[in-house]
Length: 70
Image 1: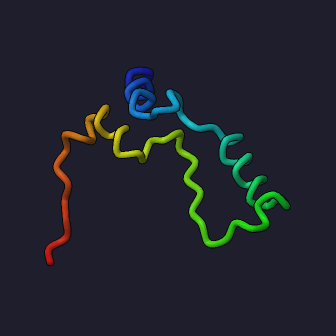
Image 2: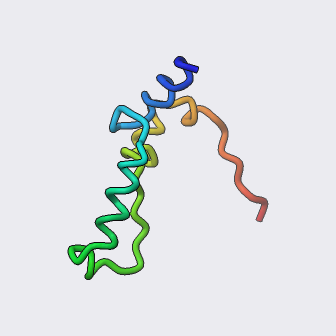
């Protein structure tokens, strides 16, 4: 499992898997007065994993993309 974890971590620009605390800090922010002007947003807490540049570093970039028939 160590190899799989290291492989996943290499695809994340933040260099590590997220923790429960990472998600908790985002939730605390959204529930705080500092976020009172934030509306209708999706806050992605993933260390940058969904960035297009991060896919270039992963095996996912070489996988074919399945698109629905139109």
